[in-house]
Image (tube, rainbow, N blue to C red; front, top):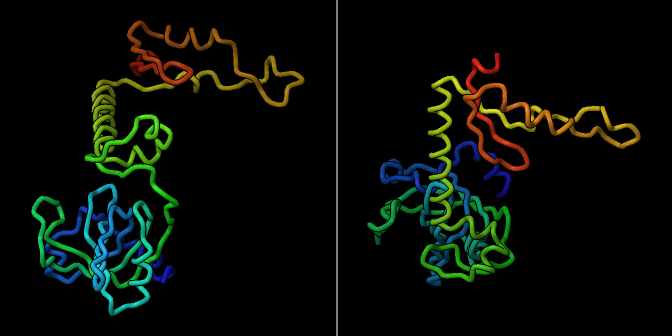
Length: 227
């Protein structure tokens, strides 16, 4: 089962990218993501699968006892891969991006079972801040923080694109201060050059714009200033 899913990974699509057109074409898809929630109705098991593109309902039919047995043991935040056919949902949910379709699972592999989630990965759920910071890797999966991360990326990308169009070059000053042999005699590895190198680098041009970044300074220099 695992081998078959791996073989089809090149056909993987995002959960939020599945549409009714796929259902009309009875398209077979491969999905990977986190188990957001599971509903066990006895005969049918519904799992809401989540990835970076959105969420999608997948269904396990009791006729396939092996699949049903795996679905019964799924927990929130388990990482799974599934293969199945897209169909139109009987009970559609217009509030969800993919609320009109679902996937009838034919194969499943559990890539990484979750040992336990300290708080729900949902915007509506409230969690203690100390607990969230302790499990930051889970907190960053929450929709609100995902939106903030993507917004930050878009702002940074827009700034870089604008400065690049004006002939600026982004340089992180640690690149200008790579470790050198001097002063490293008797030591197991080379030591960084003198701090003056870091201080002199922004002095190449008065047009430098710099901001703190890690241990060094991120300098944005016009190309002409480097010639």
